[in-house]
Length: 102
Image (tube, rainbow, N blue to C red; front, side, top):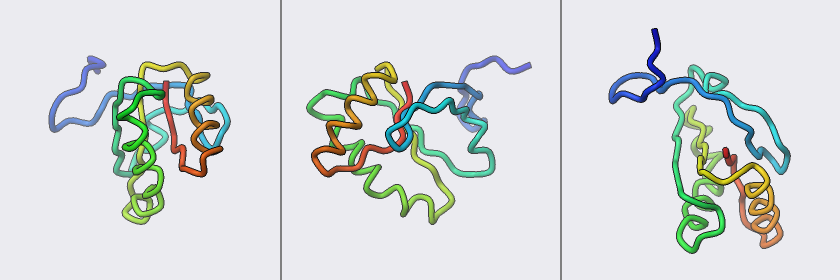
């Protein structure tokens, strides 16, 4: 029986979330990425002064990660609506947005 808690050295528990993928809402599950390496990076909020640099850097190198069989997924406490607003603001500035999960 799965406990739903993360444990070092064990697969992460599956979860489902509404994500912003390529500028649109999409229901995704961690198990959608089974068989691939996944970098889950957690950050507090989209519109902060520190987080955008990491999100943009991961997004700009997403294809490099994919060539290695790895997907990069960002997770925060923001809603999918905040993610979409941030994605639009960053895309409007010519930067990458990545996959953002709320």
